[in-house]
Length: 368
Image (tube, rainbow, N blue to C red):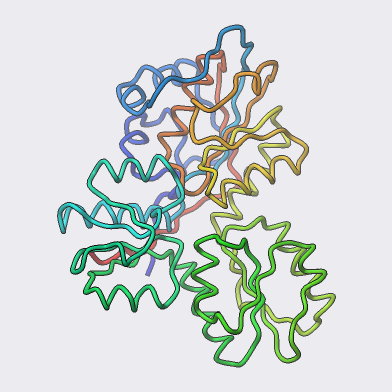
């Protein structure tokens, strides 16, 4: 189902191809340097200028950093890359418009880019005109979404991340064994809504350690599942508390937090240890992006979640010698390049990539 390919964090966006060896690729090992001249090329390049929306924050009077530490892995994971490509291929194959239920991934720039290409985003499949094409987001859906889509005669392209599908299958199996499922996750998140829908009558949501200490569970066999984009450390603590209270609680055969979430959190931990401040590129509704900022803060380093460089307050980096930069799994690489260019304009003379692991996973394409 998979083949070996360079990590999804580098993606196949035009911007990452444009800079060539300027930004280290996933084939590079260890620590890599980008010179100040190379970063300046990013700033002045055509793709950087074309991507900018609005104006960045004023740098007047700011004393910027001298170095940037760039996390790796970062950015697009295999599931996000697959989902975004599904919409693009659907537009090519079916023509405009193609409808997308919810945000295909949680990133404002990605959504706007796809809207510009002809995608129409809706909150509910019942908003899609009968007989049209609808793409389901990477976060997964409850079974009734498929039923309602079929009832409207929609052509359904399912871009659910395979790692989320794995959790759905586990939920159905646990429910089929008459087990109560403790789902660790955040209420209202689309992934959690979809997972709870697999076995709604048998699933109890636990959001944090406090709830783990107080939740009441029925007698009988118990299992837990987790949202794939949670903080690894916090989830482990929640599971520890639950198992202290319910010793027979069983987990899935393999942990549900996805490889990309763990890798990016491991990378940001190392980044935070060596940086004065960390900038996380990602949208505020992106669970995995928010977790990156929280993980950095837990290391004792100030961290800020921003959609792009235009949201950075120069006071955050004023006086900082080293700024760490990373991006959530739904943030495209060209946003990283924009951030590097902006930091270069403040005086960041070099960029050092801090790599903690390699990623080569590639999921099979969504059939369109």
